Image (cartoon, rainbow, N blue to C red; front, side):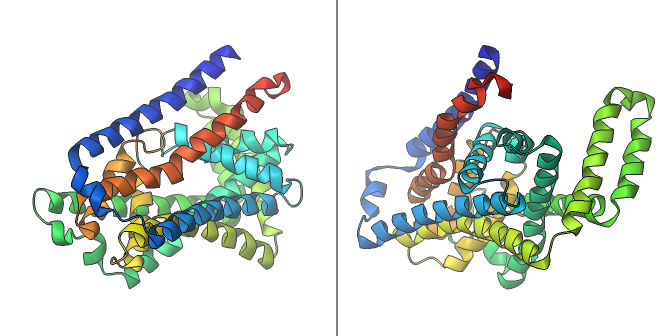
Length: 346
């Protein structure tokens, strides 16, 4: 237990150091007295901060609603909220390519859901998240000009063109990966689960995968079970769980819109919202825990052309990370002892 707790503490400390280090670097590089004076804390600022906090709640309500719905009454609202917070905490201390889904099975099982069913529910939520991006990213690209999403505008020059070009390339590469992964999940879970089970079973019999045979067969069995379960869901159920998914992601993006409303009101809210899709897709391949360091740097440079002042952009990046990252580190730390304190949970 002591070893596991020590390992978890290191996973908390490292991303905090990354994030704080980048925050200090941004403050030293971009923020000065004139920057602070340019930020007006008036009624608009107060309303914007209040809206940002409301959208943080909306994000968690959406995910808790989804957990509560897919568990079909076996997960109370309180347990659903706790599961959501712990998944967000996991996302904060693991590389973005891992995310909170990796331990969602454990958290659901901890809340009283059987291990097999927890796997089924986790695969379903994973599919819903990927489907959200597959559907909405093309819509954003359709209604928002590419020149607005990936052009440096007023801050062209000094390597900015190269930065935006790199962001565009990474965005479309990651999006292509999301589409492929979603297609695989759709095929494996909904369209042809038995065929997927046979393919995995065939692979498991290969000599170099023999040691993983039991685990691979378990995964295949879980996919078949998930398929049978999701095919039995009603249209209303799908509308509810996908609606909860959309609410959660939109609320996450509206946090930044609220910050711009508070401190940079002249910028197009539609463009601010659209660029959040780009930010979160790019951060999916961040190698640092919770995107620490990279998130602050990406936000400052990507939104800097809209703001026109890198100092103000850095300030907003720090506030954004507090609302979207550090609060979940703190909340997760308060719940963490309960997951290690009970011997039956080891």
